[in-house]
Length: 553
Image (cartoon, rainbow, N blue to C red):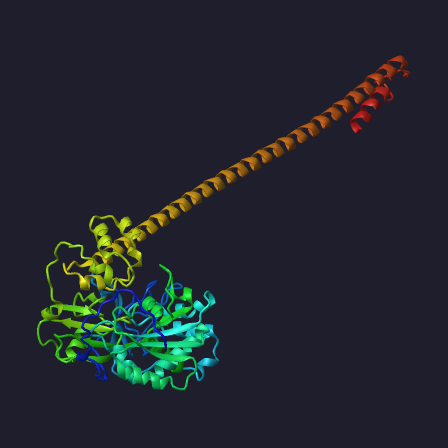
């Protein structure tokens, strides 16, 4: 297969013979496991357990939050004895939320752990969901949730899956040994991922300094169509996915773009093995292979380690130090991070523990830049590191960004070849961290502004609602008042009408009385003479009759 040359790169002493070829050993069960809730890129997982709760191996103890996140499972059976802050495997040494598990020694799997008889019968979305449920992340160090990458086929036109077996960092041999011992399982996991991505082409790239791994993977793919194992040149950083894809396909990934933009997705052999275990056996990601090596380690080894094991337990199993280490690193010497203390735990992305002697680190004091241009020639991204460093040292981060800071992959090639021993990659990592902090601050400011505006809108809406309610009550009161006034006016009008009618009736009656009196006055009374002892009662007059009739009415 034709390979394509990439720019830059260096040839450091790989120092892999210290641990290469050593079989993978299971680390004895530790007394305690400290399981951080942030072991992946994305949102921190949310704990699902409480103190003193018993959990089985593989049981979910923390739930993923958001689209880019990953759940966390119990590495073994035991009891939860802590849920709080614990030092993280990070250069800052800051504490993060951590679940502490005390193993019971039984290593009993959860009863719901169950695999799939034929993963290739599943739909791509079902495969991605099972990978997500298993908590699988990129195990080459990036720790990006693997299920998210398996869903890229929905948005991109993909053609190729690449398994990155280059393992170009010096000292590290965990992927090499895993490919030697689990080649068929890795290929099976890769085929399952290819099914999820909807691609037919599988490329497995392995550097030439791993002949046993190359042979094992070639045997595992011998009967497969569309699968090729490719021997890669030994050149750091061949493990950079963009440069690996360019070497294999000749296509260059756009600046700040994804390899998916050119139809390629890249995964690590350990990730493929984890997918195999998740789909075939239903087992979540609870352990990984780690290289414990370096000149200061008494007996370098490749170990199968439970997530959450303290680094000091690994070093103890390897016979501790033959001499005091000058530097402790998690990962490789080029891109790894300093270990703040030995009690920090192993995480999903921890692929190596290095204990380097003073002779290996070769510390030298930085000198002024002599502008030799070695860093420019070594940069695999075609950047000008000395120019970016000048911007960073002067505090001009915007200038550093304009000269390509965000395109830097942090491989350390520039610092490796610098004759003045300037820690260029440290400058760039510091600048990226500062920019990230600024971005978070800006995002926080934007969110604060949004919340303030939302609060102002809410208060204004409340005031408006109060005003409208008050106006409504006022209108209702006014309407009620008007109704009452109208009712009173109607009642008054009715009373006045009644009084007027009564007055008119009385006036009519009075007129009748007057008329009766006048009529009576015109008639002479006809009476008999009174008797001797009294007068005879006179007949009832017309006036009296009229009065009686009026009263009767």
